[in-house]
Image (cartoon, rainbow, N blue to C red; front, side, top):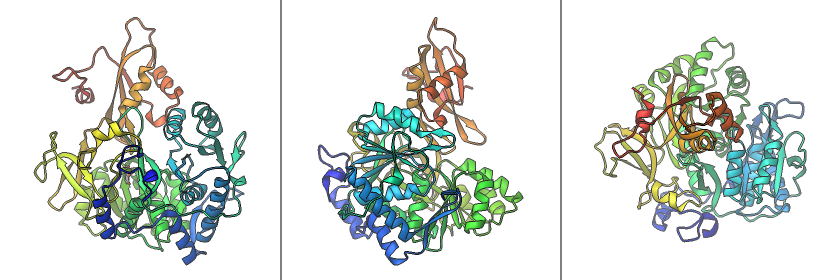
Length: 549
Ligand SMILES: O=C(O)c1cccc(O)c1O
């Protein structure tokens, strides 16, 4: 294994990795098989070059349907890899990829995999604050954007980011007018010989929902991630006949890997990119493309469940609906099969690794009342109290986990890693769970300071820091409050400076938005207060802020 790229457990490495005896065990068990993403696509393309890999319903030159076969995706990845190499992008380089659900996402990502460069998976919703941070922290050499998407001009964002992050030498624009930057379409070149990365090398950096002021980067290897895909495919029964509809942002870990687009491609199946999660966009695609499975966050699952009984589109090809990202209420879960005519599969996962699924043949009660069990027999689960002592089965405690596809540390974050991992390498998920007698996990809440806004994770501290930058703000605390649709929304409790100019809630929200924060992180509600409730030792009690009663 190349210790440099994988970040060995040695001083100077970018991130801790698995100790040798664990790596050996995971290899011996057949979990890590020495596959890489680049070789995976090459093999699939050789085995079935003419089978369709990717359907982009609006990606054609005329705005119509565009399809790429495995052969074409493979050729495109090779040609783009050659073009990117010619621009000096090489092994281990970081490239921030912020693309919507379009076919180019896969062309770019597989080209980077071929080079051994690391995509950093940003979301289309991210703005200057997040992107400038990812680019600077990751010392990214390039940044890939659409020209425009959802009425937003990413070229303007890129100009700001470049001014703040001097390591970014290239901005590549996929589709549309590249403006001052380079068009992705101009890059492809005659394929060149590139040496395959090692399966133990990092493949990409995924984003953490996090609970700290700055998002953390998650280093995933080819070996570990491909194992999670293979395991997911087995549990979700993904085969070459599967058609996965990618509704959520393609870069997010859930639609990427659980089993997601990469799982579908691994199986030789088909990926259909959904440009919008709205039923009037997704339902016609399900009918036309014969979609067999998809993944949704709970608020979208509610919308689909309500819309399905009234639709004139034929949804009968849909076998499995995965729901995850936030807790799905039992009542909503019960409505899935009657409304959509498919099997619900709950998934409780995290970009750091561990993914749990209800099994397709679990009893109906288990499927609606639990968040499933781990993919792997080698996923180790501990449920502990505040002192790290195991709680009895059935009691609620902190979820700790270690296993063949769960990271041993964040990228370049040694101090944070000391808090987020135990000495023997268990990841402290920050989730509160209980285990049922059948070994299924039930998510009961969370201990980390995070808001889960319909599946979008928001670190309270990150938003608080932006509020604190306002001249009239003395102190701020951001907490979750219940929302019937999102599950949770954000509420910012703010103490204004004595004698400061009066400021309205709307002005504070606008202030945060103007600082370049993704819109989903802007507080839904701002409440002014004179004091925060305190705990016994005088710390702010977020628990009491959450339930003012
Ligand atoms: O991050 C998540 O919320 C998530 C949910 C479901 C499945 C996953 O893989 C995830 O990473």
